Amino acid sequence: MLIIHGGTPLEGEVQVRGAKNLVSKAMVAALLGTSPSVLRSVPAIRDVEVVTGLLRVHGVDVELDGDTLYMDPTSVESAGVEEINVHAGTSRIPILLCGPLLHRLGRAFIPDLGGCNIGGRPIDFHLDALREFGAVVEKDAAGTHLSAPNGLHGIRYELEYPSVGATEQVLLTAVMAKGTTELRNAAIEPEIIDLICVLQKMGAIIKVHTNRVIEIVGVDELKGYRHRALPDRIEAASWASAALATEGSVFVRGALQADMMTFLNVFRSIGGAYEVDDDPVDGGIRFWHPGTPLKPVALETDVHPGLMTDWQQPIVVALTQADGLSIMHETVYENRFGYTSELRRMGANIELYSDCLGGTPCRWGRRNFLHSAVIAGPSKLHAADLQIPDLRAGFSHLIAAMAAEGTSRVYGVDRYITRGYENFEEKLLGLGAKIERPVTK
Image (cartoon, rainbow, N blue to C red; front, side, top):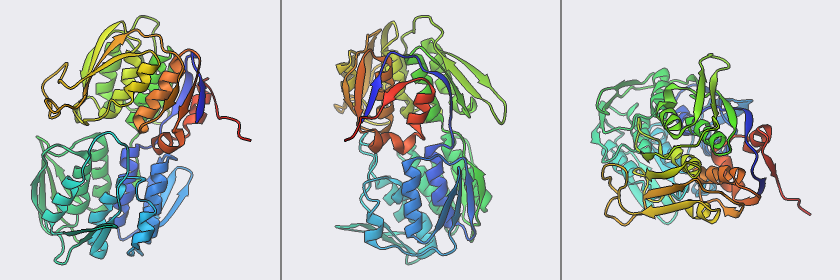
């Protein structure tokens, strides 16, 4: 539990390191190499610890020096079900180990998967693709066992939806499958492109065509890589939204304009101000509240290059302070507005609807999912006891508590926030936030 005394504008500077959504996948890619890999700008977050544990139980030597990760996969071995199950329920990363382990060992095991409760996120896309590659999938009470008695071969595969996880699965499996793989309707997020850069450094042949088509030519061997992870655009947007909601000013060192163009357009449309510093070493983006009333907007999330679903929650908190009616239409996950019940208890005026509001119909329309939100502002937020439901919603609760009058108690920070935000308490204190942990006897 974290105690937050609200009402203080956040002022100062924070540093963002490598993207959570790339670093964990690049760590998995190291399994494919016949020589060590080096990954730089690795954040100190719990997801990195989880993947480190998964790699180690499979015989990978993993060492962290500062923010540089060294991984030696030359002695990869099978891990026992009990060893792998230590990580069950803590992450959805184990599913992505399947392709690399099938190539290296001919078999893989997936424990029950965890992650944030923001929608179904079924693993069917993953298993269907692996079956197409030639994997044999068998399920029992312990989890899912996979084997490749005849090896893996290239496929022509089209995703029903440009899923990031399924695209990563195909990439990590296809790079050493016999023949050529053509993936259609692929995700093309910056983290996907950076993963492709990692695999290309290892010796993979991957072509990104127009219209979400990725072509992968399988190779017989991949070597290790040396790579610096791209900055975390989700964390950068979280701090930007915190600056706006608290009427503060935050310089996010490491934030890249190119990866945040859609967010920057939204930030400016709401009434926020920003300035880009392109210095290759110390650059970043300063975000601040200019002192004028914030403006309502109609937005909808989408796959890249649309508005990222992980930007939605902190933006909604900022929109509670806009002068008028705003709309947020969530098209990526069907159950991502659960966190708004806590905001309403703080005084936010937010109503949820099952209709597709503010844009074109999406796949969740007419299915009774509350996937559109109408936010009426400005609302005077007041302190409350808050229970964090998931990672990104959790940070939005922190923002709301810092913008509110009074003292809030936020529960679940160690379970969720540390999964994706490095040293978040230290950063908050550095920005002038009045926070504390409860005194234990």
